[in-house]
Image 1 (cartoon, helix red, strand yellow):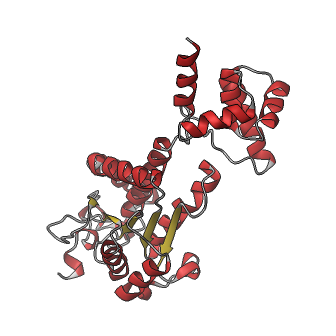
Image 2: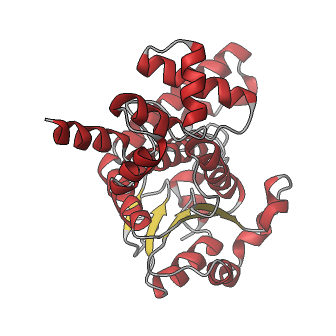
Length: 303
């Protein structure tokens, strides 16, 4: 298929006079088109949920998540992966981003590198992907050889494969385990998939990574209770979370955090149950790090 026929490459009739629009008209048009992205992502709810469930299951069994992409898609994958350790206190190896061209491609365009399918396969081999892992390929137009090379190699190794594209299966058929296809339509600037397609990618990746971490017990209520206390800002945030959820004053919350070895989740469990740090840590481990489940279990045993 010629690339010009792909949904992501077509000209948007609403922006055909883009170069002659008043600036306010241009901004309004962007806003109107961007509103379509949310609906397009919403139409993929079931497939996104399937991806979250499978990734969480894989991680619970020792697996990892690899985002793979080129250009904007690759950069967004690397970004989402990089934000998991500071947000959820995860091992940097748990969620990884692979971009065609490597780290240099994050700051300087190297789009020609996306055309090599063998490089994608080699990246999977270098990452030593196994059947326990999930490989999430991101390609807005659905055709990027680097991504398909990576996904095919991952599939041969028994890994779960997730395919993200903003084109329908009728235009770009695929044969992967899970497919997520938010159809955002032609871009305001024809073919510039850093726009609506990029926004859809960011929305989906945010939902997937956050949803997975919720399943893994990294969240309590809507708080980041596995936050890593690595600087003064995060120390203040940790104390604020403890205060909000326990009604302790600042001094008492800070003391509790220190007694819990600066682990917010453990501090909250200690406050709720009266356990010391060692007992609390043991209880959390018994419930795979799920604070809510640990508290509920302790409450049942006290009755």
